[in-house]
Image 1: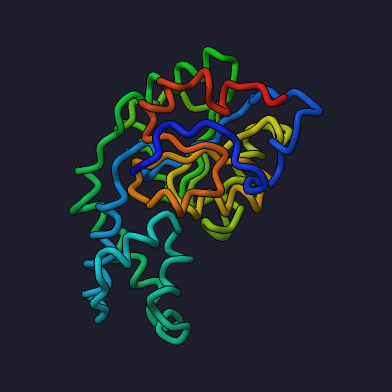
Image 2 (image 1 turned 90 degrees about the vertical axis):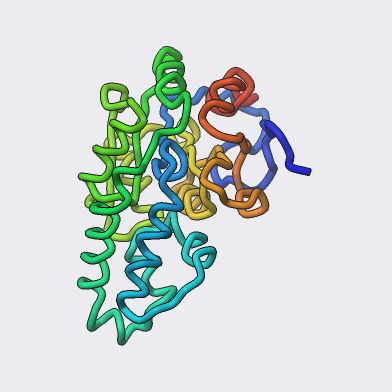
Length: 247
């Protein structure tokens, strides 16, 4: 039976913070992943990658491709192509994947319900918001429109701002810098994949996970709390790590 609305801290899994009750910590900054967290795009990315793989001679099951979504292309491609293959074709594969996604799937991306309302709640609470996505800059702008948050974002980072994509911490470190390098204990990540959790932990950040990206709950165990989607997080905002004082 699926566990609902888990808001309690899971000890020992989230790097910095939530380690005890010695100090009260108030969250001042929230960093959001985008694909699968704010917009419904994971299946579409998987289809674009699967189609690209077929064009380059790889017949890979959809579920295997889908499980890698959340990584950037630089981390996804080595799962399916050898070093020798990538040395010869990486740029062509990456370019073709981008073409397929933009021309065939980008227009199908939709924002999840209540994303704008969640952002408004966070901002009214005096917190800053940043986006940290493995998407290209142009895609990220489209996602912001889909989620109706163009005017609600303090800072944003994309694949253009990181040397390595998730599960490396570069994208979250870039977001922290754009937010003015806030205290790590006062910053939290919201994401939908184990790669978000891994990257955040490497950056010294805690994570709140959402299930709407379609990843199995056991892969999200490293999160401080797990919610169904942005609407569920908004509904339980007052009890969530985003609002709650630690201590």
